[in-house]
Image (cartoon, rainbow, N blue to C red; front, side, top):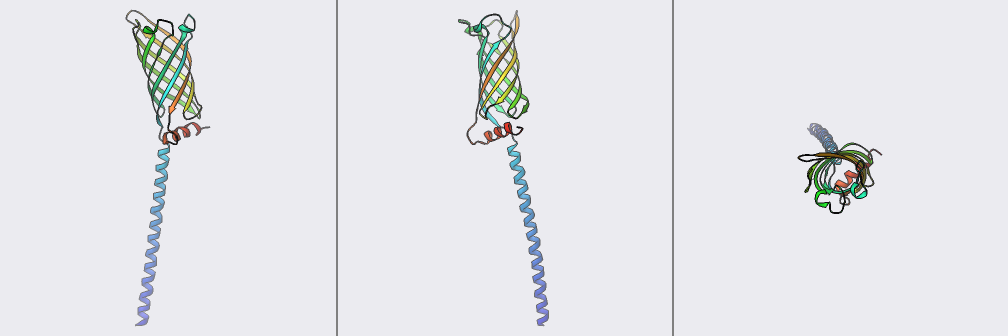
Length: 206
């Protein structure tokens, strides 16, 4: 009787040890799966495109227009928001800075821009704009431009721009070409996720 009771205890102990090993193995698999999921989730978050507001100042000069600096210089400012490689902004500026010409030289324009190529701190952009010139006979304004951008830091960028502006009116139209330098400040909060993503984007291919 004692022998049979001892034998039963041994069987129960072996069975319990086997089940505990199986439970431990299942637990390890669950933990491993959870770690993989967490890693993939973190990686996907880091790969999301940054989103932030920006302010750009453009110092453009027309290159095929007769006249001095006041007739050639065309300053503008643009405020907008970046969605990864796509920007959408509202620009306002002057077609010239001639004295007394402000009423027919001031314009407002919707300007979407896309980065068609990027490598580290450098990027190439393409913009298409449409707007109007206040009080001008050729009031309908459209624009196409491309630029080479350099990110000095996640918050500051500089670009060289070249583009064309088309002005249309009821009885006349004209086009002109410009070349300019663009300064951009990105409103990124310190230690924010968007700043980390921007920083990762500009140093990933260096």
